[in-house]
Image 1 (cartoon, rainbow, N blue to C red):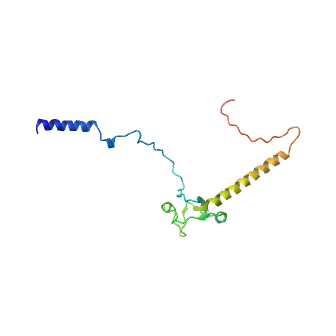
Image 2: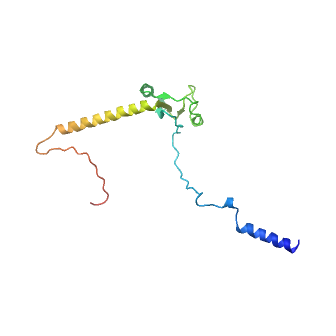
Image 3: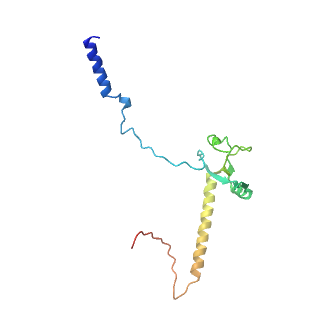
Length: 160
């Protein structure tokens, strides 16, 4: 090997040792912080426009809960077929009726508009119950110790 060739190969070697290819360089802009999220105990269904999903209990401690399941179906929940959520098919128990079941739960869906109506019904029911409790409490007033109905809460730490 001639001296010129040897010098050239040394220069190439030094250049390749000192500089990594641009593709291998790590840039701060390209690095994204990765965040670990705890996995859900129950697999999440893929969202479907116009529907909300919910896992309905169909058995507790190995016993079927038909009254509960029947009530939920009458409320408007419909079982989701395995073909509708193919990703979940691998996670869920195989059932003869083609629905998605997982650990005593069955995946159901409801139209979003019906779900909003149901939610409003239960919110109104809760407000009515709260008004009734407040009214009953205010009924037993004593003029010596009048009651006031102010619902406020305060959280403090340490000594005040």
